[in-house]
Amino acid sequence: MIKKKKSFCFATFVFSAGLTAVAAVFPSPSGDLASASDWGGALPGNDERITLSNGTFTVSTDVEFGGIERVYNTRNAPNVMVIDQTEQKDVKVLFSGFRPLVNVLSPGHTNWFKGGWFDFKNGEIRFDKNYDDDWANANNQCLVLTDGAMVTNVSSMTLYGTASTGTKVFVDGSSLYVGRNTTLSGYGQASASEILVSGGGLFHLGGRLILTDGVASDSRKSTAYFTTNRLVVAGDGSRFIGLGSPTVSTGGNGDYILVTDGAYFSGKVYFGTGNRLSTNSLMRVTNRARADLTEVRLCTSEMDGLAGGRFEILDGAVVSNDNFFVGAYASGAMANGAAGCSLLVSNATFVTKYLSIGQGVCGSNNSVVISGSAAKFDHVPKQASQWTYFAGGKHCLFQVENGAVVEWRHQDGWSYSTPVSNCTVRITGGAVLKRNGGFHTGSDRIVNSGGNSIEILDGGKLDVSGKVQISGDGCSVVVSNGTLSAKELVIGAENPAGSITGNGLAVIAGTNPKISVTNGTFSVINSSTLRYDLSDGIYSASGHVPVEVKGAAIFEDGCSIVIENADAARAGASGPVTLLKADSISASAAMIEAAEAGAGGMCRVRIVESDGHSLLQLRFAKGLSFSIR
Image 1: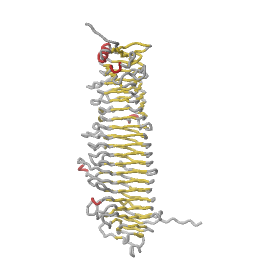
Image 2 (image 1 turned 90 degrees about the horizontal axis):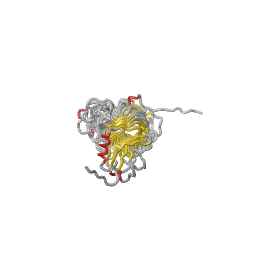
Image 3 (image 1 turned 120 degrees about the vertical axis):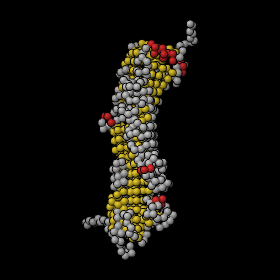
Image 4 (image 1 turned 60 degrees about the vertical axis):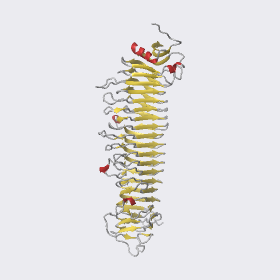
């Protein structure tokens, strides 16, 4: 059997923007670029540029040129150039760069590489302004790779576009290798450029993918232009592999990264680089897609005023991550910080080594939401000290909802070194948050670190194996038709520093709330308050006790027990309502009298002993009550 030897053909195109020599123009809209006869008798020299117009071309054997560029010969109509190697898939075609020469305002310019192997020899791909510096003509252009085409050794790629149109690169069932940066830009104004990887294609990037409006660095405080630059990786087997640091950075308003339908993404993602007012960047990983990330920053340290950077993991997607920053990355003295940045995990999987919400002192309204019974949120730490949720800022949120089950493995929620204020952990809609260890609501050693809260609502559950401490100024826990289970519960700071009062608040509301202290004390200290809100009426289950303590309940002098809307519970009560059950209850007579006075004239508040336990009970007087003095 005679084995056929596989042959490779090489066509080299070396392009330099600085070349001024007249290009050799291929005389036909079709033909073999390696054929002297198709060139009219002689091939251009290996140092000559060539110019191709519309048409379909092939390369049959080794050939070398000094560069390649495009010229469009039809005004206001689509223009298509195709290098078709589908019949010669083993042929290797060498380019050293590609740049369309845009000299008329014509729409729909398409450059199509079909099949084959195209080696750019460290040259660049540029779709940008023409030689007359008329960048507005860089509109509506396409580079299409199909039929298993492989484009390798591209040094960099630049895609400029404007307003409603931009440059598009389609990698469909093909491969594109770019060694350094790829830029999608509006060149100083709005843009809508896109890279789409589909059909099992691969985009391998050694540098950064920069999505930007192109505003110069010295103008970063000006209004950013709205951009819709996009990277889309879609379909089983489709991949984006990034090696840059960062791999993807956004700097316009509205830039978008989508990984979907079983596709894969790897790299490092930074939102908010290049323009200080950048907003609304989004990365979405969805529908069985997977992303392996070394780091995500939804706002970088040099940004000031970035808002709305979002990251979404949805519908069976899986994201693993080393470091994730929701909000400003560094603790610098930015005037405004990052606001409205968010991470959403909905019926998907998120595994991380480190997560920070509101890094620094300035960020506000940043959030993490874990949603759905199929959601998985796991922490695999590099070391125990590197797990902080609220690392700074104000009005930030960590929420577990809609049946999700989350386990906190390291640290307990709030920074011990940076002010954190008015931030919330919320468990709602039948969700569960588990913590193997303690949990607290902020430092009692840092001024301005207060007003934080834990909210357990509508069937939610917080399950803590250690102590829950409601510390810091004005911090609270609210249990409304939810469950809090902990070994020990302390309302108030035990040893506040300086001017910090350390007063806390526990609110028990709804018809089915539950606090269980499993093996320790329930303490209300430092002028703190235990408040019962009975506005929804009596507890739904007969004999339901909202607070049960397997240990002592201790109310320090100066603290309060408050019973609100007691009249709303009167109609459903057939006897005393037990509000707290413990092995023992320690509370002053003055505190109990104040609780009774606050509950209303027809109510009595008593501590009674029953079956070896102490009970705090609310009793309703029958009939009319007269007081004669």
